[in-house]
Image: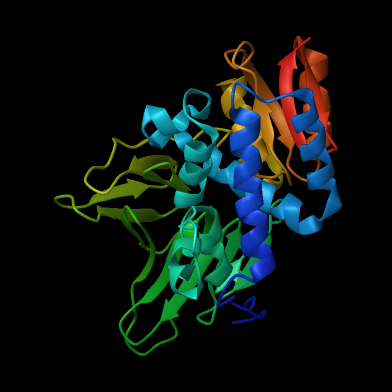
Length: 326
């Protein structure tokens, strides 16, 4: 295959470990009811003082965006002591006190898992990879993929993110199946072009050409999705296929096209393409949005939102941005 896989890290450096622990501490402090303006100013200085601090804060933000899956006592740190909130964040990235090289597996989950993948794309990057069999893979932002081609099968292990796969007839004497595997199951190409995206507990497949066979990891039987259709599946079920529309795979064209999407969901999706955090206040998150937004310039996308809706952006040091009521 063309291109060189990014080198896999084998262990986080002491500097990285220290920065993440400090970031979790700051998260807990700023989330507590006793946080003061002086705390906020001190956090700003900490964030600006070191690139490692900014990277660590971004990782903690990614974990916190998944807090909805945790018990309420963790998801709402303002209701818990700061120390407990800090440990909740650290626990969800595998970095409790005393962590060492033996806890490196914890870094391979949630936001850290891409560090050891065969191929990965940076936040805001789309990366085109030519595979050994002539097939191609377009990686969306912040995506991690392992590639395993052997005598029996051609497998792409999608750890996180999204990919567009364009399959090529197998040059091997005995044709091997081509499949994309996620935590939820497999999507096997039946001579096709299709996208696969990991979501919270689900995988979404959109078929652009030919068809794809979806098999949940723990489900009964398989479902074939045809060109012009998309379907979402979990580990034990496949939702009924529905038609593709103009929003389907729009990221492959460099735009995020949305139809009647809540602003909160749009902010979360745009945030995948933006370094640093992007959030939305609850009092404007319900606003419905339709439009096309450039993924290579999220500042332009935010400017369009502030012009078309009663919202404005509030930011800290150009790193953390929120959409708030105007």
